[in-house]
Length: 430
Image 1 (cartoon, one colour):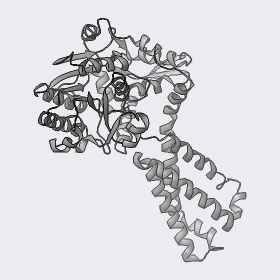
Image 2 (spheres, one colour; image 1 turned 180 degrees about the vertical axis):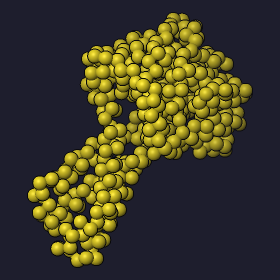
Image 3 (cartoon, helix red, strand yellow; image 1 turned 90 degrees about the vertical axis):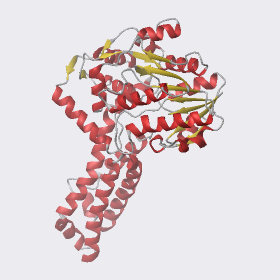
Image 4 (cartoon, helix red, strand yellow; image 1 turned 30 degrees about the vertical axis):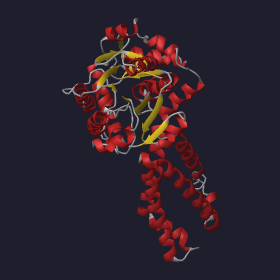
C-alpha cells in the first residue's frame, strides 16, 4: 500500500516509516523540510510542507494521489514562533480527513497521546482530542493510538529533557519528582501502526504504555544509569519557584523559535501524569509492552549519547552567551562612542570614524539578535565570524596598539569566533 506519513522524520515518524518500508509498503513522507526527509529516508517520496497552513481540504488533495492510508505522527507541544498548536493538530487534520473522504482513502491511523481530550488542561491535549473526535465521527476506517512517554534512539521531546537532566554532574536536579510516568518503546508503537495499517485494529482507541508506572525521579535515574553516568551524590529537589521560573524562560525562548521540551505544557502534562491503560497494549500484542528497563537496554548507549546529553545542557548557555556578547558589545559601542572615536580619530577621518563606530555597533546588535532567533542562528554565527574577522584585520591595520593592551580586547575575539563555530555546528534544524 501507499502510505502518507505526517511528521515522517520525527521521533515516532521515522522509526515507523522504516518499519512500514520493511513490511513492503510505499511511503510518502511529509515534513517541514523535504531535503531533510530525503537525507534521512531516501527510500520514501517526500513532501515539504508546514501542516499549520494546510487548513482546507483542497490543500491536501494534491498530496493524496494514489494514497491508501494516512498515518499522522505529527505534533506540536506548545505554540511559539512559526508553531501554532491548534492549526497543526486540529484544523489541518480535520481538513485532511475531509480530503480523505473525498478521494476515497481507505484508512486513517492517528497517533494521539494518553490524556488527550477536548476538555484537557493544555492546548496540546485539547487539539489532539478534537482531532481524535473528528476522526471517530468520520466515515473512514480509523485507529487511534495513545503512546505514553516514547523511548527512541532519537533524542526529541520529553526523552531529550530526561537525557539532559540525567547528564548533570555530581547532583541530580529534579522537579515534580513524584510525577507518574509510563513509557513505551518506539518499536512497540511502530508495531501497533503496522497492525493498524493492515486493518487489524479498525475503530480501536488504544493506549500504548508499559505495565508499571514510575516516579519521574526513578525514570531520570534509570536514564542516568543507562547512559553510563556516575550515580548522583544527591538528589536536589528544585524549589517550585525556581522550576517555574526556568519554564517561563523556556516559554520565552519558544517565541524566539527554540522548541525546548522544558515548557509549561510539559510540566502541566507531568502534573496530570503520563499514564494509560496497560491492558490495551497487552491485548494488542498478546503480552505486556516493553518495560522501561527493557526499552533502555535495547537502545544504543555509547559515547555519542553521553556527549549529546552533556551538550544539551551547555548549548542554551552557549547560544545566550554568544548572542549577549554581540548585543552588549554593540550597546557599549553606542554608549561609549566618544572613547572609540578618540582611538580612531588619529588614523581615520572624523566622518569615517563615526560611520565605523556607529555602523559597527549596529552590526553587532543585529548579529546578536540573529543568533537569539532559532531560524537565523546559523546565519548569525556565519555573519559574526566574518564580522569578527573583519574587526581583527582592521584593528591590526589601523590600531595595532590594541593588540598589546593588557586587557587583551582583540585577543578575546578569538574565543568568540570559536564559540560561533561551535554553536553553528550544533544548530541543526529538525
